[in-house]
Length: 79
Image (cartoon, rainbow, N blue to C red; front, side, top):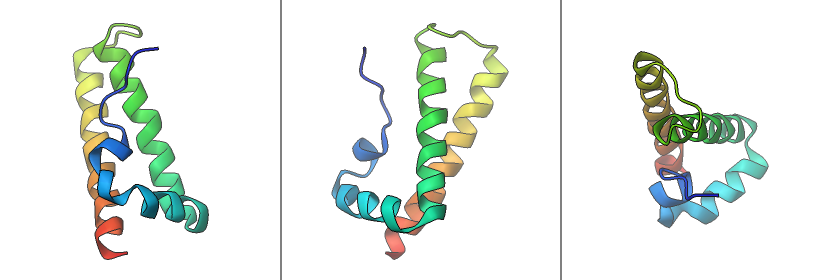
């Protein structure tokens, strides 16, 4: 399988341990991380034409991914 860009560990490499801890102890963070992962994979599949989609749908997924990333960063930066 090819490498999927924009994984949270790549986006916030200095926060990998904290993310792991929060996924185990904070249900809200775990849900956000799972949703980010799911959307990121869908974007990657669309970008690589594994599962092509309409451009507008892909743009909306990217916006959702960015919003989740911002929310995740907000939690990480306060922890």
